[in-house]
Length: 246
Image (tube, rainbow, N blue to C red; front, top):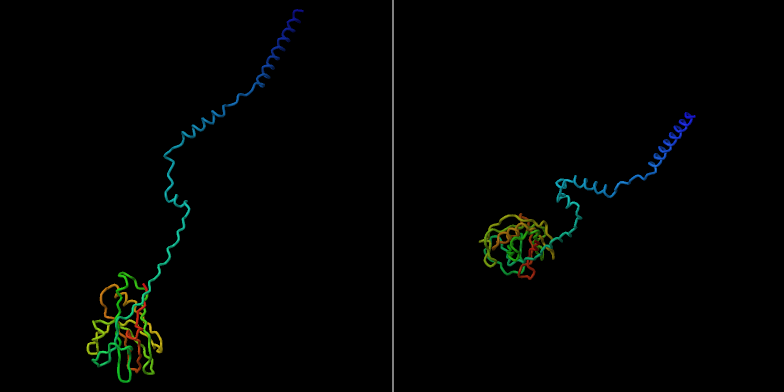
């Protein structure tokens, strides 16, 4: 009987121990899992991230990059400068006749070319002092109004620079100044209210670059063919002129 009692005690003890173990296990599983302090963790992470920053590694953006990122400001182009146009009238003019020492100042019409009897040349003075020093001449055209032709053969008329002083009241074939550089040729000019034109741009530029009196220009018809023209002189009221642009 004692053995039976002892066996029962052992069984009961064993049951009690197992029950306790099960209860303890269940109790642990039912305990709440402690949550991490999220705010504290993020603060720590940020601190570590900030501590890893190297201020020297932060480089300035090159100024070129900055300017390339800036919006382009469009500026209006300056309007082209307007050219100044000036008409420079002849101050005096005269024609001279081959092998003739007479002076022909004051006539209303000038002659250039050859007639059956005579050979004529025309000389003109122009004053360009009104053009500002340092100006760049972009165009200079001689303009002469033609009254009529003498003879049936059209003749080219050439323009020359004059080298040497002269006056309209004193020049003649006997003291004619030297003929300088060839300037231009008016090929087969028309007569009858026509306007002759010739290029004087380089000559006018030289006059502007070297202020002071100039010796003017001469008109001559080359060759031995008969043919001449009557041109309006200063005294006619329709003076020859140079239209200058600068």
